[in-house]
Structure formats: structure tokens, C-alpha cells
Length: 77
Image 1 (spheres, rainbow, N blue to C red):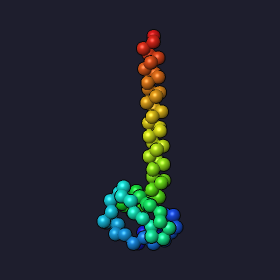
Image 2 (image 1 turned 120 degrees about the horizontal axis):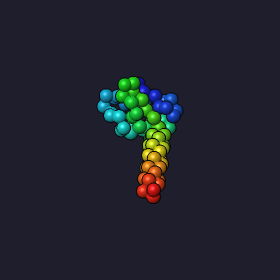
Image 3 (image 1 turned 45 degrees about the vertical axis):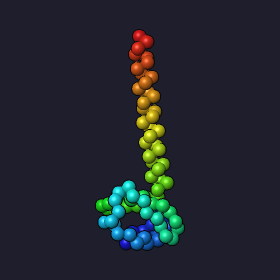
């Protein structure tokens, strides 16, 4: 039995029938949860997963800007 990370209610799902990245819902609190691990089985609130992905994208974007600035400086010399 898996428990909801938001409200600690038992969630009746077959762990072997869902894949990592799929979403499931909690019947008690209505939270949308993302399967973030299979061994051990782990559920994370979907909005927390989306925030993590946004942070990764923001970091990558900053790195790209820095690289572009360095290239411009090299061309001026």
C-alpha cells in the first residue's frame, strides 16, 4: 500500500502497473501525484515536480546566456 505524501491517506494502486513519470490521484485530498521512483516506489506532488523542471530549465538558460556573452567578448579582440 502506498501513502499520499500530501495527506498520508492510503492510495490503492498496483505499483507494478504504473511507470515512472505517470500521474495518479489521491481520492482523499484530490492531489495529483507523479510517480518519481519505482524502487523504492515514490510519489511526489505533481506541482513540486513541475517546479523542479522549471528550475532546471532556468539554470540551463542562464548557462546559455553566459556562453553567448563570452563568445561576443572573444570576437571583439
